[in-house]
Image (cartoon, rainbow, N blue to C red):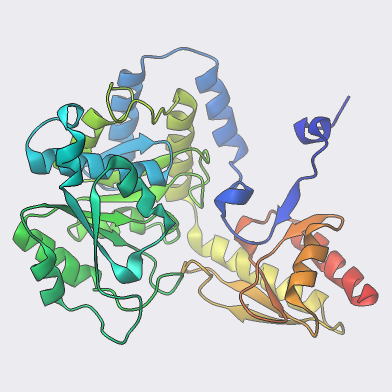
Amino acid sequence: MTANIYDELGLRPLINAAGTYTAIGGSRMSPATLEAIRQAASQHIEIRQLQKVVHAKLAELTRNEAAFVCNGAASGLYLATATAVARKLGKPAYYLEAEEIAQSEVIIFGAHRNPYDFAVKQFGAKIRQIGYPNIILPLTPLDLQQAINDRTAAVFFFAGEGGWMAPGGLSFEDTQNICSERAVPLIVDCAAQIPPIENLWRYTQAGADAAIFSGGKDLKGPQSSGLIVGIQEFVGAIQEVGFPNYGFGRMLKTGREEIIGLYHAVKEAVELNWDARNEWAEEQIRLLAAGLEGTCFSVSRCYPNEAGQPMARASVSFPHDEKKMLDLLLNGEPRIMCNSEHPNQVFVNPMTLREGEMALIIDRFRELDGEL
């Protein structure tokens, strides 16, 4: 009898020391969340009734007027686009024609452009980029004021200061003020911006109409889940566009397993002692530094992490090629996934580690020290 499904498939799981990347499964759900999903999957339920109850509870947990569970943060961007365009044109999204959708614009700062823009393009709206991804000519409030016109359906703001975001964008405060003055919906993409947990209500309480989160990153819910929170007027309208209604949202199916799984994960996240978790991460970095003393590897603490989240990670430097090191780590025993941003260095992120895995990482680095 095989130990698990990956053994049966002939696949080797890995230790994720990189972070909550979708391509390697985001986060791991807790045993309690998995049990909640098992219970959800074992019985039938009327989806609209389930949504009504869970969405109300999620709104309360996240200190928002309304909430909606979708099948990933990118689908949240799509649904928010559809909702904004429908409200702009004054008709239900179901009745929108491709030609009128194409005439609608969503404003995105050049510094905030990323591959998830395709969620807006997929719906058919036009992206209107303003500004540049640099500090040569930073955006000003006047730039946004001049960009808003009678075709503007929404402004999308991408959170992540201190992480991957390029410089040159407008501040959230200036963006919100202008959107409020011009009565334009402001949608914030917070997909990877947990922690801090306060982001679940920070942007919406500061005036955003909606904020969108990945359920499968540090919220530790199902990977194929996303969370939209915000004001009732806007998020309530998303409910009319999204699954299980026929129309644009029908293809974005969210099962009872994802709805219950994300609800339970959010409940755990808001109850978590985040200070204790941060201290645990710091201790893992100290263990790594102590464990690699006397080797060719030099360990230093980095803060914040690559996504700008307030959690420390470790930089491991060495006199070797970083691509070769990443390959040796990934294809060794155990398999270890790290990432790198600079020559002769890899990062070890404790965010997605479990107790005892840092010891395995230390042992593997020490093996490589003797082999290189």
